[in-house]
Image (cartoon, rainbow, N blue to C red; front, side, top):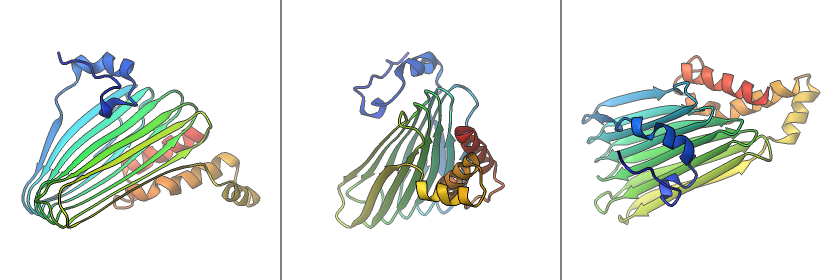
Length: 245
């Protein structure tokens, strides 16, 4: 048995430690994915349906490999998704994920992206929609090694709060040892636009339908590559309707 982390551990500063403790002894080691040189892989992760849902994944991209990962995090009590990604020369990683939470849910996405070789790219796009007293967090570290010249990396994090009791946390982090890189990050937290809601109401849309439509636009771009009929897109739409219903 390993020691249960505490909030003093930076990667668990917003975690629901009590909920984590209930599943800690049964957690499997991180799943491992290795994408071979020149290969392309895409994967989708849907919620397990359990009230406490913790998933951990370690990914290695060899030279010129490409990996697309799409995830929806919406556990009723505590959802945590951990990613540790290593990129070698010319590799390309894209991560598109959403936290959807209501009630007293705590939802976390924690990523470490390690650029080890030159000319690799990584894009992380994370959206959170939170109601009631739910908490949604993104902690993302991009580490660029000295050999990883010409790295191109971006973290794009946005949250939408539906109630004053909801909380969003964002902590994008860069650790760069190379001197020829293009690395950027941005994080915003906001509310639904009152003017857009008024415009929708003036055209006969019920308030709940108007909110759901705006929120679908807010997160919908995450799944564009998969198409609107993808299972993750459909489950996200259902989750949004529940949030505003």
